[in-house]
Image 1 (cartoon, rainbow, N blue to C red):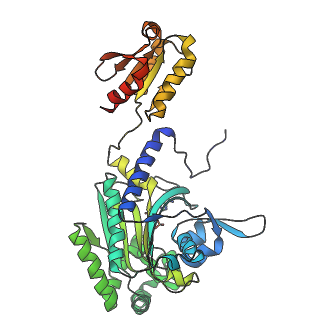
Image 2 (cartoon, helix red, strand yellow; image 1 turned 90 degrees about the vertical axis):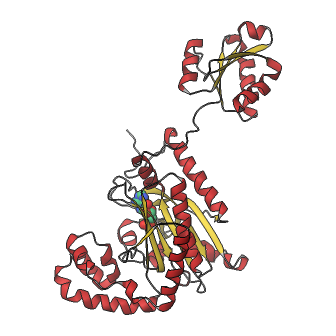
Image 3 (cartoon, protein in one colour; image 1 turned 180 degrees about the vertical axis):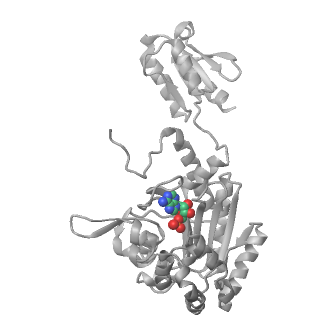
Length: 420
Ligand code: AMP
């Protein structure tokens, strides 16, 4: 039997309602903060990601879907959106049209990770990228946005963690201090962390090995070695979050896996999704635009995983709004009225009612059963004696009250009844 690729998932009609609810909530909140949607291609040249995310990160070194196309160009299915958004920003000179670009997306990403609950090979993220300002107001705003969206979706058990990575020059000084601390412990570190010591020492904070975690607990903290500008801006961010009553924890081990972050970094975790607890992550990446060939400019953003949010909602037993019920099911009583029956339903559909009819020549009883199964609010009985008198019976399935309506204004009456 043909099957979906390992780590990818069909979203079947019974679940699509949830996705639609998530997507419309996300779009409404982004609209109220005046973020504009951007859509970029799934395929990009591989170099875009290796340059921006960094060769030694897990994403680039192990997880990308990369292939040669027929003209021998190395192509990658995007593993994240920031690089693509910055590429589009530079390619279309968006900064010349507007000095500040507040962008958002909802899109599929691809990473060849080991699938497990909350981790897939094709997954979906929504996120924001703000290009053009160093204001810490925006660092705060993206955290507020992410938090507001997660709360509006109904999540309760979430924790915001924040940290500041400082600017490159202060981080360089700190990295030497961290290396000095780690040197005597090198033999005790895991092999992976020993490699990171050479290539990207900060990432040892991400290690999952217990021994590494113990050693890193006593390590000097980046937050204690921040430059004055980053320190002051981090205070602004915290003050805004407090005024907005967004609870947060300071987490000095939050270093993120990507190379281009600076200053604010944050993560929102769910206490209800086991090991894959990160729902959302982001921060400032002021170096990236220049790295990708643009004139130096500022950037800050976040990305959140939709599948993981759905899992958290399910584990929190959150009831999502359900719009799957029908307004009206039209039961056909006499098969010879098929044409009139169809036109009757179409007229109501043109009035934006959600209407279903029988396409399977079912008995009246079976049609009523179907109407119940589809949770129709009203049933119209089309045909019979009433039709002979130019009328139709309308039954309210909630109250079981029946009305007989003249056919010529049945649509208006039904609209009134369904709407009330
Ligand atoms: P990242 O781009 O790695 O910072 O991830 C941002 C968010 O995307 C994470 O917090 C997750 O919610 C989600 N995410 C990342 N990788 C996966 C994956 N393989 N499967 C499902 N969701 C993911």
